[in-house]
Image: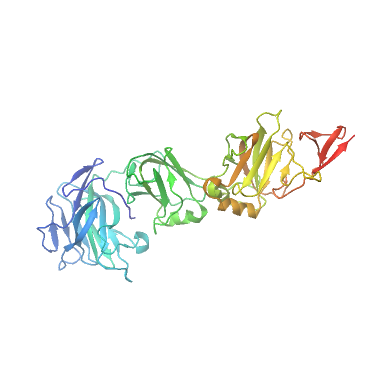
Length: 472
């Protein structure tokens, strides 16, 4: 499969590069068009597919700010690169452009490198047309290090500069996550042309790739250290750029793109302003049974004053998507007052803070007719350790569409903490708390004005099914 990467330094002669030797091969002033070209270090390129064809001079190609004169392939004929004596090639990178002014009906691509053949769908069509300042970059790791390798183009004529890495071909040690990554980590992202491929083709929705790295200085216009998961075939985005400012970033595979990743050789990762030192893989759990309660978050989220709104689910409803949430499924919020002696309030916003919310409280608000205000539910935490929202299609849609800091569901309140958030499939049995759209209670329990459950012997003003009356 193709691979993109950035060269830290380039020179005509071999140089040291991360304990690897690298050399660049381009057209030189003393060359003449010929079937075989011999470079100063003894390396050779020959058109072995047709002895009557010649390699000739192309236009300039810019690599890391330096211009090199390209070489023209003999269209469709096999070429053979032979390394300098005593060296073996482990990797080959082609900086190239299509020798046409615009796209034609003959897609140009590298159809064979080192004995491995590619279709245009697998390799990707070259889309750079006579633009040497912004060449297409394709890199291939040889199946095993060799003193020579072949390469062949297809479609329109290509002009290229070849960069070769020499090595013993030893298999790189994978990172601690045990993933097959090409090239081996660490990878430095100091330009958008750098990338690496995680060769995993059995991913499913909910699987997670956890990137570990650190920031580096690149330019004053960079947006901070980040990685960007992308597809391998058409280079389209798979999601928002992930910040590595904290040292780690997690990408959760979505249902839409799980098959895209599997079909295209794995997950391609681009980036800027960082070094990625490791990638860990965390598989999603098996599809839960109907009776299983799935823990989404297990940490203390404290609402100590109005306006403090911790985001309890990720932006864009990722967890709900990965769980394939359906109407009737239930999200449970395990809550308790910070000081039970005081009144407490909790609001749960769906989709975004401007959207409809449910309020659970022992600080009851009433309408003029004495009924409890809409969406306020009284909860006896001694009897019920959690409050629940039964999902409707509208709620799911809002959660999926939520973006930015708004998140999918938010907590807001006073004297309240949430210790755990869970998800439970709809089993056809009603949960303990009414749905968000319910405006009146129908549980026949009696409450005093402090929200405490009382019995029929209690004397004073009480509330039952949302109505207030005097019990004597």
